[in-house]
Image (cartoon, rainbow over all chains, first blue to last red; front, side, top):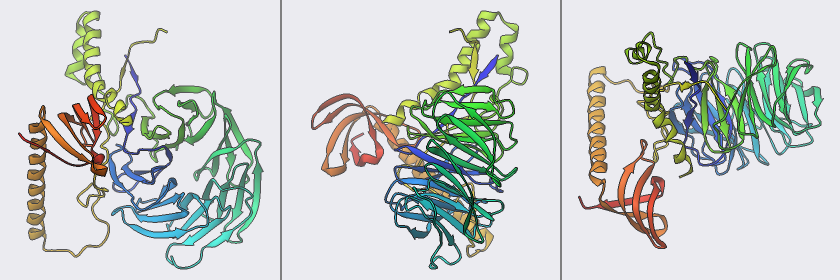
Length: 349
Length: 128
């Protein structure tokens, strides 16, 4: 009796979810932040998707959101020309950093002392969070709006992506070290510290590059335009989602497509694995976040696997006639699945 | 297309959604406050917290009972921009984010069944 993936839908946003990020693993578990065009980024418990709080203050769509490693601080990038830093425990706004155009990306250093921002004004900015009044350091060079800016190589270097290029900068000298050019629009970029790798998505391609040399490692082609991809912490699989509303799971080593999941009602804008690799979250144009199990059927978070050997409930079908067994299974299945399926219409209320 | 019989992975419950009105970050949530707070004598803090908790539980119970009492009754809703509507109350969802109503009398006609978004409701009143 095979198990079917039950995605957990996190509702609450009223507009498309355009970015999401997990924190590291903290003594309180791990957390998830979602950036939404409704201007109200939300913090959720990472393993259950339970809403914790909403960061209120932005006056425009929030395009980027991130958490620091221990989930004590959050940062958001918005269309109101500001990036904001928040206390992720109390939800209070700590800092508003004014920019000259829409801010698209924010990233903390490992020690949470500096914040990197990038946006439509084509400048990378580095803010010292211990000196909020001080002017940020600026790095120019991009010729089109920056979509993503990330610290890498133990915060010694900076990676930034605009529409057609990915550039590597040295932090200390603030100069460009290397760049990559693309014929198609780069839709996303994710940095993997263990192994110093980059995942870049453009068109239907999911490409892996070295974060140090920018040299290509390998790439996969998906059946549809991909907007975001994420590599499992153990580098065994990757997940990707895009314009056909589906999530694809690939074996990283062989490139084989392992699974595809329908569920979202709109294009998928962002996909991320949790820091423990047990689940991945997807954010969509349909305004929802969904949590998906990496190993379908495993007991984790809100997913509770009931095995025939363990439970008295499901043990019965084994000794009864096949027809009854299926009926009983259907009954038990429908008990569990009713509440899930009935929740989806509410999203459009 | 024949697919083998699969059962969906059972879940304990669905993820909890936003509170509707509050911005969250409950101080008594899963994370203990990491900001330093003035520590009080443990015993009195304990009883003050549990008193507050009991009061909150009692208020919550009263509210939930009020919702139960509303089922099937005619309720008048005051919405934004001075709009008033009446309807028969049916149910609320888990997070009290939406009210399922029937025979919703609106300025432009009667809607047999509707979902009222609680964030649109300023107040409501009914006679039990």
